Structure formats: C-alpha cells, structure tokens
Length: 153
Image (tube, rainbow, N blue to C red; front, side, top):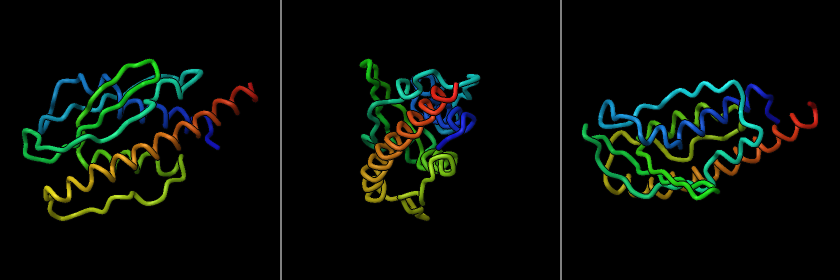
C-alpha cells in the first residue's frame, strides 16, 4: 500500500504526463511540450477522478528535430479529452518514476539502437497496452491509499 507521500508523487507524476497543461504548453526542444512541475500539497480527496479514464497511443511521427514522437490521447470521466506528444524516453522516464511506488516490473518495450518505422509502429500497440495497464494499477493504488487515509483520518 502507498503511503501519503508516495500517493502524492504518483498522482502528480501521472497528471503531469497526461494533463491538458502539458498538451497546451509551448513547444521546446524538438517541438516537444515541456513537462510542467505540479506543486499541489496533496492529492485531491478523490485523486482517481482526475486521472484519465482511458489513455492510448494513437500514432507516431517525426518531431521538428526528427525524433520519433507518439501521439497519446486521454479521456476523462467528465468527457474531457486531450492529446499530447511524447518521446519513447518519456515513457521510460515515467516508468522509472513509478516503478517503486507501484511495484512495477521491467519496462515492457525493449530499447533499440536505431528507430525504424516498423519498430515505431509496433511500439504504438505496446505503449498503448502499457499505459492502460499503468493507469489501472495507479487508480487501484490511489483508491487504496484514499481508503487508508480516510480510515486513518
């Protein structure tokens, strides 16, 4: 079970990765939006309500710098949606940040020294499955932390 510090970190990391603020931010290096650093003092009472209900990788393409980026579409229960672009390394960074608090195994997509269209296309499916699994695991962990906090407070 997550302690409150881990729950806050998990919440902030996921909301930042899939947020409208990240999608609307001014592009920086390679045409990629910067990842804003949220500064909430705690997760909301029902943290899971602010996470996407679904999130999946729809496509890939080149950024202005020529790097491959993946288009991630996320939908919320209230009907809102947002589309962001993320590099493969962003998914690996997210996994590293959440590996310990969520007891995640190895990152499911192998590194490759060279990016090909066939590899990028295969990763669309792999990354979509990964994000779905990650959100499900995160929502379960946050719900458990919310329940533990409510029971203890």
